[in-house]
Image (tube, rainbow, N blue to C red; front, top):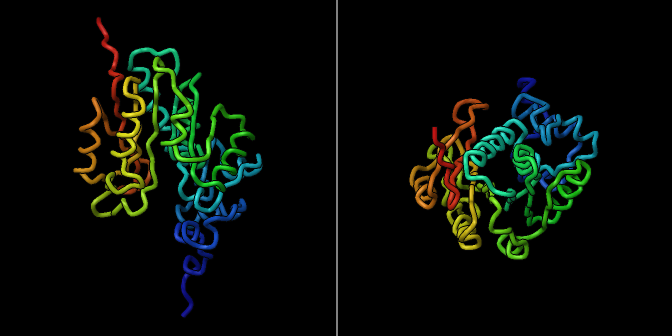
Length: 266
């Protein structure tokens, strides 16, 4: 039995890149485009730093297999950056904004948030030595205003004090692992680490700062886990970005603590 052309294609899907031989290898341009083609029907799917694959690869940007799968592509990162910047503008003015990504990876989302907040300072943290080195090199090539540190954000943030008069924007997107179930949705209590644990640490680290959080979520979120997060925030709003097929979209929970929206008078 012959089988279709589709079935005979080489396998460059999520399973191979996340768990197989390509997980910890630097991908070629052909492999990046094949992954986009096979997984999403689009060879230009892995668009990062406002560039299509051929352009960023030509500039010397390189990604591991697992980073290509896990990174947030431009279309989504741009939308999340815009919404976080809009939330900052609705709040009381501050002399400066510091944007923190505790799980930076490719730094593409952090890059887009900083783009939408002119003059802001970006700080990222990455535990994995291989990912850190590639991303650090990529940021140097692009001359982005982002400081990427290797290590656990819980330890390193204590060595990087943020002035109390600054607005602190934190993008919270820990590894999902088994936290996502297609039938029940994303359980924010099962991410690594749980989202509530991350927020609790940041509340303790910055008890008097103006804090704004952007928690990356899925189109469907386990209700109790979502309410658990909303309960510890002073305000929150949920946005789902319908840029993929129904049921496969990502979203952003924007919430604040100690940084209310400015009161406007007419």
